[in-house]
Image 1 (cartoon, rainbow, N blue to C red):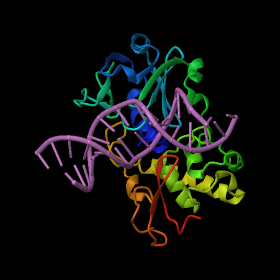
Image 2: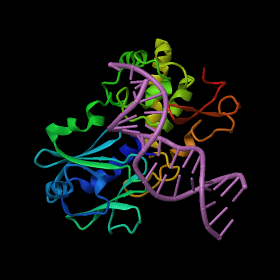
Image 3: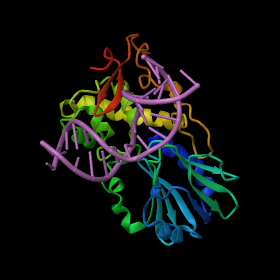
Image 4: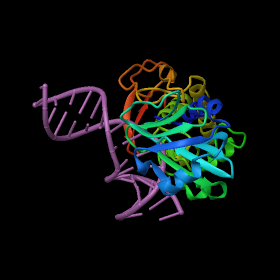
Amino acid sequence: MPELPEVETVRRTLEPHLLGRRVREIYIYLERIVKKPEVAEFRRLLVNRTIETVDRRGKYLLLRLEGNYTWVIHLRMTGQLIHTGERLEDRHLRLAFLLDDGTWLNFIDMRTFGSMYLLPGDRLDEIRGLKTMGPEPLSSDFFPADFHARLSGSSRPVKTVLLDQTVVAGLGNIYADEALFLAGIHPARRASFLSENEAERLYRAVIDVLRQGIKNRGTTFRDYVDGAGKSGSNQFSLSVYNRSGQACLRCGGEIEKIRLGGRGTSFCPRCQK
DNA sequence: TGTGTCACCTGAGCGC
DNA sequence: TGCGCTCAGGTGACAC
């Protein structure tokens, strides 16, 4: 599932192919992927506009276009954005963009949760997820004290709080479980009960697991591929996620799986207190 | 206002 | 072999 490291890897692999390019034609096979504006206006605004930057905020890709427009893409659960020489033949191809150099940007999404927007740069606040998004965990304005304060303000389980994009941007189920294991914190602990020391351990762990995920070019269990269609390798470096019933790599105890906030949550009951 | 639950979706895996 | 059920999870909407 695309979380921050996966979206960042997609961004990095697409950037050299998209910078300075213009969309020549758009093929839309599933209109509801386009959330704003109306499909006809989306098409009119996007065609022949030069892509000036390829950025990321949390799990959103932000393609800045000439004329101060931003093309916003969220991959949600199974979205793939793949640059190719030919249009891909795939039953889950939802949109295809022919670029001015004759190459293609394919948007494949099996479960069709993905979303696209095209808005003037000063109207990005119309996307609620962007407007309310918390600090970027790999940026210089993410501080332990602020992170602790955000945790302290919630009585929810700490795992649930880590998934809240208004608290910290970009974490999903995989990296939240991994960060909690690295920090030695039980996922069901009330966030507001974490000590300053524990919050700082978790802060470091969040940064570490995200950096490792980027270094390994993302985690591929089934659907995720980068902008070139290649799988990541971080699934071979995970400690707890998708390892329930197996031995903990640290203590040898059995990894357990519970549900928190409706999400499967893997952890080591011996190592995480 | 904070929190929990559900719907959106499709395919894989499982039991019968 | 085929059917039905459950599970996977990011986010917004809704209820309390």
